[in-house]
Image (cartoon, rainbow, N blue to C red):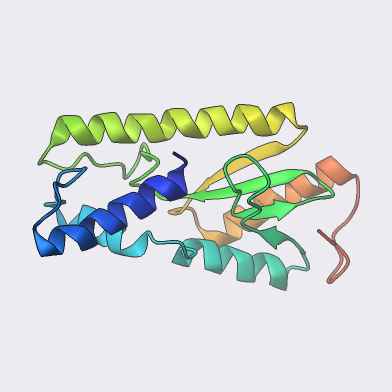
Length: 169
Ligand SMILES: [Zn+2]
């Protein structure tokens, strides 16, 4: 199951458990952090990702989003540069700064998050094998720094300069 699938499964478990009939496939979240993450997780893009998209667009970058035909369904894709950008959530991707292990069901969560990290690595390897450069940004990074990094990579991968509206995906 891919990350999106796992997240959706968690979401639907929360829904089905409301009826109290189905056995949960994962422990109920006890911490506020986890509950907040689960509410936020559905299919749509996160706040940090949306901010990055707006900032990239404002700086003249053009891209596509959620390319499902690439390993890992990258959040932001620059086709010419073959850059596959992921804005990783600190919780789900075990950020070294903010990654926390919920107090309840610690072992289950440790295993789950370790699996996520491992899956990220496998998808990065698959992208690289196709000639793409996977770029992982943490959701906690300042958006200006994200933009600077993406622009630098785009330039070095294409040998082009970015002009407003000219850096076509
Ligand atoms: Zn973080």
